[in-house]
Image (cartoon, rainbow, N blue to C red; front, top):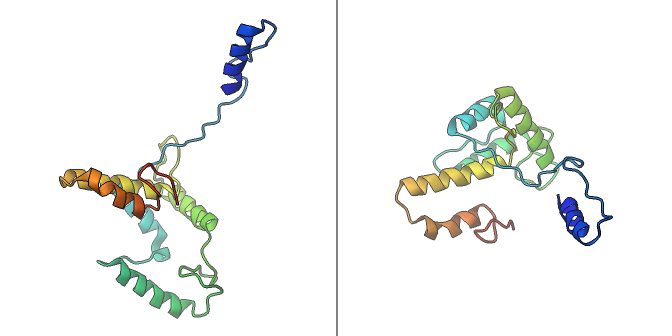
Length: 163
């Protein structure tokens, strides 16, 4: 698109400039809209994941402590300093977790009709949307709370730049 626009500009200066036709180069979309998971989508994927879950209780700390106890029973000698480890006692790699998530999505059919299938990072967006909706529905001062959501999501600033 940029090359064609520049060529059109040059054609106004130099009639010998060739302007490439539309569709010559496939348009590569750099930004992909997120897939916002519904609570039912998340429940479906969690049900499919079964024992790969970190159980969540009323307190996140309690859940993490429970996970740590279970991890230490099942994998007492992990091969690294990671908190979350795989069944092979190695730290979880994003690429592997993402691949597992992709398999869960495919197996459950979540997002099957969406233009872009859900990615692991879309859970991040789903959390943000659900939090914002909850604040609006609860009559909260959303503008005042945005910085805390931004920080929680790991952004440097509310505009979305990641740390």
